Length: 193
Length: 119
Image 1: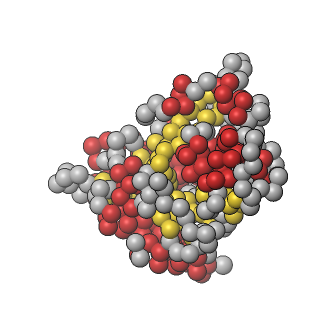
Image 2: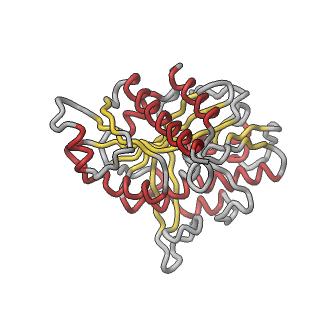
Image 3: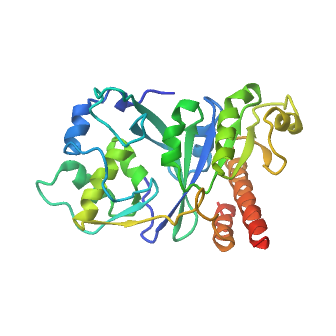
C-alpha cells in the first residue's frame, strides 16, 4: 500500500534523473524515495499532437515509453517527484513535454559508457534546463573527474560530482548539489538585474 | 528498455476508457498536479473515475494516478479533466518554474534545500 501524502500537500516539484540504460537511475530514485519507485507509461504520436489510439492512422507512429518515479515530501506543502528518464534520442520528444517546468536535471553517467550521455547533455544545454552531472562510481575510479569533464565537453560552470546511487546519503547529496547549483544561478542572475 | 504491460494494450480499450477522446481539452494537468477528491464515488460511475475519487481522498499526483490505474498519463489526464469539469475533484497546480519561465526564487530554493537536508 502506497503511503498517502498529507492533506496539506499542495506544491508538486519535479527533478529528472536522466542517463543511459543500466546507469543506475532507478537505483538512485529508489534510494531517496519515500515510496517504492512506481512506474508509469505514456503513449504519444511522434507528431507530438497528443495521443492517438487509432494507431492505424497513416504517417503517425505511436511510441510508448515507461519511466520510473519516486517521491520525497519536503515539508507540509512541497512534494518533490524524481523521474528516471532514459536518455536515448528517440524519447526526447516525450520528455520535452512531460518534464516542462522541471527544477533541473541530474545527468547520471557511467565512466565506461560516457557516450550514452552526450545527447542528453546537449539537449539540456539547448533547452536551458539547469543540470549537474553525477558519476555513479561503482568501484575504484578509472579516471579522475577532470578527464570525465573533458570527455563530456562539460563547461566549467556545470557541477560534476561522484556518487554511489545505491546509498541514500549519497543520492541525497546529489540532489542537494543540484539545488545548490540552481541557487547559485538564481543569485547570480539577481545581482545582474 | 522494458516493455511495459501497455505495449500490448489493445488501443480499443483505451478508446473505450476515454470515450474516443485523445486530448484533455483546455485543462492543463502537469505530471505533478495534485488531485483532491471533493465528492465520493456514486454507484454506476465509470470505474476509472471511481478509482480516481478513491485515491484522491488524499492529495495524489497525476503521475501516481496513472501508475495506480495502469493507464497512460495522457488517458488519466482526460479522466481527471472530466472530474474537474464536474466539480468532483480539485487540482493543486505546481507553480511554473524552469525553461521559459523565471528560475525559482531564492526563498523557495532555500525551502527545498532545508527539506532535502532533513531527509
